[in-house]
Image 1 (cartoon, one colour):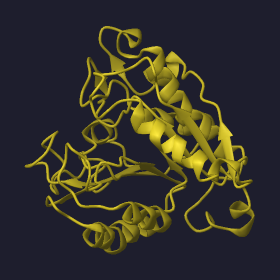
Image 2 (tube, rainbow, N blue to C red):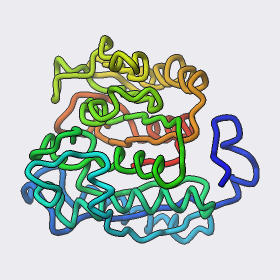
Image 3 (cartoon, one colour):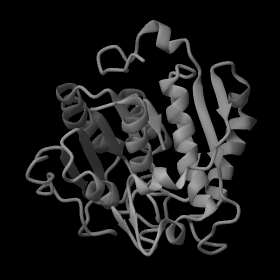
Image 4 (cartoon, rainbow, N blue to C red):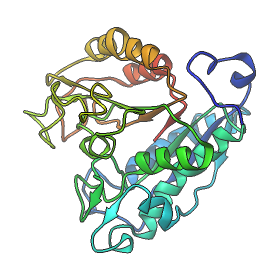
Length: 281
């Protein structure tokens, strides 16, 4: 199978394929009925896509999630006391939704894809022994290792645009020179998890493959898009990845109750257009 590379990822044949979407709102998994991380977060998005007629377009292909296998999770995590203790069926389906998008992309069904799934995952570290920031297992990392194992990909980028630093993803790939992890987020001195500073650059054999860009509270579209254009995109051009994954948190939005950033819906649209990820989770 021919691998997608940075230089030919937007060729005309690829652009004629649909965008894949997987939904999994996890009705049976909740922190509390009123917590911001709840099923309505995805249901509102799904309803709007249907109301606007987007899901009826021929350019959209809706795919169904599946269970990630325990071996897919164990490829990434050392779970204490065992995988089943950390991964409920909801977690397995959320991770499996990402794998469905990965398969569809690599098998040529879609040009790109979005796994709208929960529970989330980017705070889950290599050693998983409980909930961290609402995360038990790391969906993005499970997908990366699946792509490497099944399809032989080598150079992969994860761009984390959540308002919180993706400390779990950073931990998992800290010593891996072939996975570039980039996170721009609200300054860790002002927000959970209190990490993601510019001197966190990767382990001794992977120095420079972790790039953290902490942003001050109140950063607007202009600031975030400046970082994207002047720092993130040039680094991607230099790294020449085979695949770009967007760990696509939406909580930089100015209405988010748990953070202090001033990003708009229009800003997210421009960010996605310029970053042009292969897969967003």
